[in-house]
Image 1 (cartoon, rainbow, N blue to C red):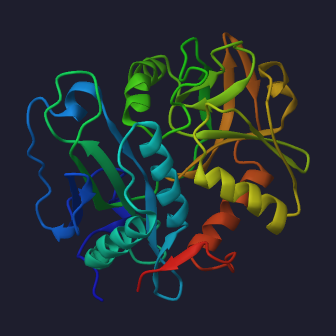
Image 2 (spheres, one colour; image 1 turned 180 degrees about the vertical axis):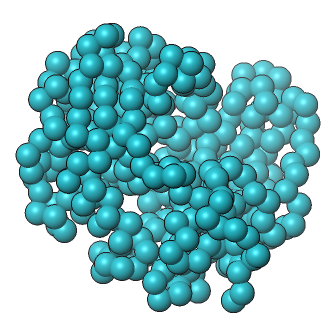
Length: 336
């Protein structure tokens, strides 16, 4: 299929309208059959539950053109399962996981001309999301919902090459114990906006949050999980308030099974982060981003930036996603 006439190399990480998006409505206790539409606009009541009480969750994943010319998606079954978990926590009706996968495939297939070509460094970002749509004035869940999927082509997260990040230990909290930090809810990201803008104003790329109970253990950043490396060991913080990143889960497998590294998922004390040699932030957008400095209230902890291990992790996982390396069974969904 002929691709759209776009300068793929100049794409940034921002919204570009594509041809089709998927919509399914929940009314009277059931989801309708769903459909593709060209209309990117949403009309709803001023008192819609999502506008009053932020009852919404979302997912993010990418579709790629592989070296062989296939269009594929990376581990969408895990996104389906994670959204189902988010919905249960937010008292929203679960969109069936099999239908979630079908909706993603339909949306990507309908926008196949927008999937960037292999070697461009770009990809098609896919955003499934759900929200309460009917008028709710009392504090309670909605009774009507929309599940939607749109797709937009995006360039590499780091335009002009990877630069090690400078991050800071935050004085604010991201999530409370037994709260919603482990679900991909819009409200979690709304709470981080003040702090990320303040970090940027102060010359930092991101905030690193510690646990709000004791403020002694590393958790994650506002939009990514964090990993540490020492020698041949990959360590990632373990906590009930961390979002279970699909990229992190995949990197742990890659480290152990492809690179022969030791892997540890455990609580990581703030006091020990100076003992690691490499540090990275991982997520869908950038896969893994090297950290050069963590600033702990004036004490700078320096890392190797794009060190040998982080480079190998990045190269291996992107190699799997792009079809340059064999993938574990079930990791790659071929769309066409």
